[in-house]
Length: 109
Length: 111
Figure 1 (cartoon, chains in turn yellow, brown):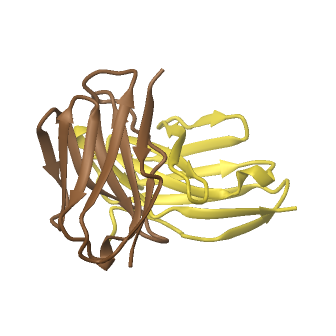
Figure 2 (figure 1 turned 60 degrees about the vertical axis):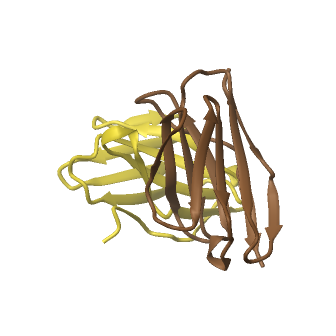
Figure 3 (figure 1 turned 90 degrees about the horizontal axis):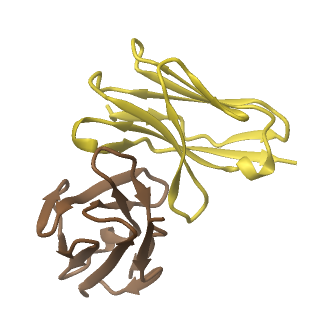
């Protein structure tokens, strides 16, 4: 079983739609959680951290369920520019990051 | 502010040839440095990390090696490339216990 699992997609949605991605992790001792965004042929960039209480940044909302070892990302009012691959990332001891395989989002006009 | 550079941006090399990829960080001291590889359509795989000059930890045994000759320089090398070494190589830096930030990457094709 992979340490961090994501549905690879692609998720094809129209502009303005709401879309949600899920991610599960296997290490119950994982300490921190993040979503990174990766555009085609570019490096990953931090989108947002994920806190147990849930957190929001504009159109993006992240949730963490430690009991179920489950992380989610919700994007409201999707824009064409949201098209990218979204990477679920877990930090374990020693500041090591483990990346999921990514979920590809394509927003269509 | 901190910036991270990688070169070359793209590279095409024949099987059996040597490899040297370079990563440098500006605007910070004593960063943690990382090399990742992303194969086509796959997730990021941590190859090496370093917490200081001359200190290298290997995560995956293979024909690659890493060196850190200076505080803000991290080099990925190979003596003989394999076809399976093709991929997108990403260098990242972090302050101790903080988030990792990635360089622009090197796209390597082994032919």
